[in-house]
Length: 49
Image (cartoon, rainbow, N blue to C red; front, side, top):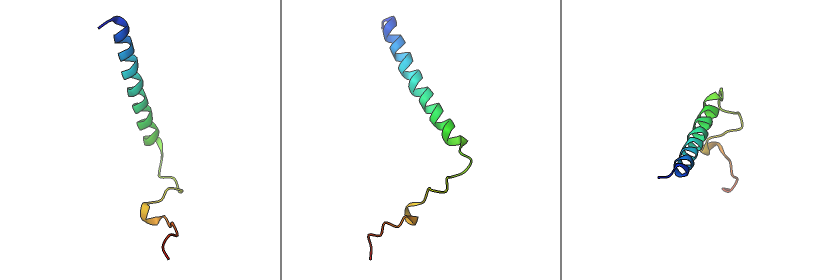
């Protein structure tokens, strides 16, 4: 593999790894679930009478 191929591969893998770490960090920093989030059975869609 050429040097440019290695650079593209390393940049791609590094970007995906960095994005994954950043997403996990953001999720873990949330102190508790926001009040506006509800479970599926708590959502009233008003489609039943």
